[in-house]
Image (cartoon, rainbow, N blue to C red):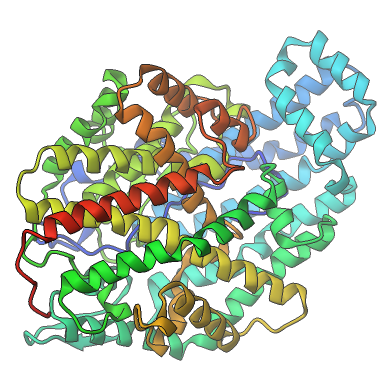
Length: 636
């Protein structure tokens, strides 16, 4: 679903969280979904017993959509009618979200299956029909006198839950269109989803991924899941072969990916112009009321802190024992001798112990996620790559998709997705439906907060210096991937949309040139820090998040926010724990900047990023002390 929605408060778009593209673990090589034990697969029957029940509910809801128009022209007549209209809208939206969650997750189990994908497409169409039916509501609210709406809220108890929404409608008045225009924009929903849908099917089902022969004689397929594992191979020549083959294959489809990306960018540009925003960035950030200065401050701040990033890269070069660090070296283990595997049960044990500072109820709910099949753990043929948590089934519970590979990074991914799940669980449990969906800007706080607790716990339980180095290195990898890499993506995305605004072509070649230039700057290519080979120019084309405009920067801001909050919780401050749990339960009851201020961090300042950079340098100091006790690592 588009990140520029015609219904900003709708919950039909699930939280999709990108993590490393993982492969199947050595302990569970089975790729046939039918042979994977049930305990490792989510139970979608808790949403609908079967596809027939889903179909019946979908047809019933579709038939009821015209009822939403019964309130048209009457919203300012009385507080009761306005409450009736908003209640009916929320009721339909909640069932629509539930239907979408089932269809989309069923499709993600095997992206090659046409039936579930068809169900997902039906939901995109139904969502557009829903948007068209309620398109009159906001324009009509804006026609009413502001004083009248305030009196309605004061006199009708049912409107209390809609106060925030109604005030936000007034705030966005300058960008709200007429009923007919809003309906037209809503009707374009299925068309707007085409670029993302084409990318998804091409990348996950139809793309002819290459195979390479490794130094040990094995021939392996470098698909998205395989790439995530193979780029970390211990043999350097193998890593280079894997990365060059993967990005080379993407380059062969540069024209296609350029066309799908152009379609996405033009869609965003169309909505931007239609809603009378001066830029795409302002159009997207205005929905959650985030100042554009927060986005620009992040890019500027990270660029100023590139010396800290380059210090990390230099440390990696030293630990790997190479004369010249290349981009294909960035995912290899920092400590080659440490190759610890974690079974799913071990991962669960570590995560439960790590989150103990957040209390027994938090731990007990995570235990339910393990025991009651909220998680689809292992990869299978055709399964969507990456990982996410989806909390859109309000009356059920959140669900998680993972591709578990048995490495510590996978344990960290499990903790990450459980953070999302806990925020969805507490918000859905605490807030009424219209206020339960938390803003995307805060969505990554809970996930990275859990990761911070996990690494802190693991370091306290380990005495071996090499393992400590590996885990400290993993923390730095988190900062690399979440703060620097996502900000690099954010800068690329900003420049891409600026190109469109200036009338420049959005082609695969143009985007490759832009991406390569930005990547070389971040990795210090021209200063001899790390070599960014030319084929890296095509990395942009396999990043799904560029089809959700200006989404990725929120990984970086959330990381810095969670670091600031986690430091207080890890210090044992009970008030910090209380405020954090209240934040998890707050849902969308306020704007994201204000939610985080209430939790204890101000994202309009440099403080969160400064704290993260301070912690990053502290970790590097600790690693250098440990390294001083070790012999020089041989080149690999």
